[in-house]
Image (cartoon, rainbow, N blue to C red; front, side, top):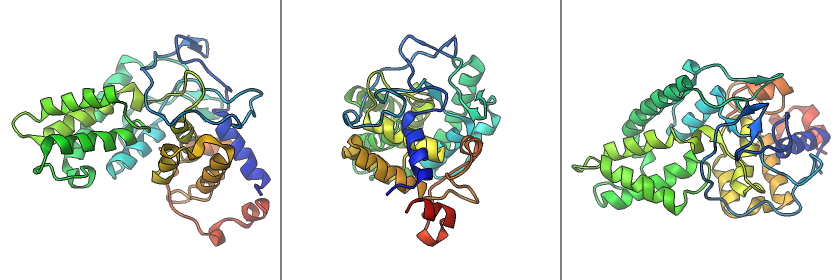
Length: 297
């Protein structure tokens, strides 16, 4: 039985950002100003089931096109590389909608694009030094095949969904160009650099049409953690478990029982959700505040 606090949090996260129920990311406008054009959609495990929540007064739909906040960017890079590089501290300040960071009012500027490009180069260099962790195979045994496995695995995490065939082909070609002369590390460098400059990484893209389960996973995770889906949530999306309310509730409950680093907790005030850095760290029932435990009974 969900307690009142968790019921509210889950409803808010499924309903999307608190400034709008749905949004048009295809040739539409946001906040009275044109939104950045989205790239082609890809990947996803079908759509959310017909019993998905209707807390906004209608079927669950896409949110406005949202660019990663500085906090979300740094948390995402840490998740990908395993190191908090604090690159977003040098980015332009986030847009705000009341107490919340928003980043959906205006298109990306040339200055911001250059900031993302510089950050992507830094992350790519770091990835090369961490290939033993990031590359899931032996490059010496089968460079091309191993490169493909790296692209599929890293791309799945960077884009928060499986890559489609066209994306795999594009990044495989880029990898092969960088690998000229048996330089596997340079292939990795170019792929990481390109992925982290893609709108599919920089933006949280939803729609057009009903949310896919991978989009739902990203919505839940970034709302509650300011960070990308963890392995468990990603696996739930991959296997189709987010296609019904039971699966969505199960994952939302799990996220709410996980506390981030330091004193951060997803259970906070609205302004705290927008500003705190939350990363996965399991919490035992005894570590959950008594007020929260009692509300869930």
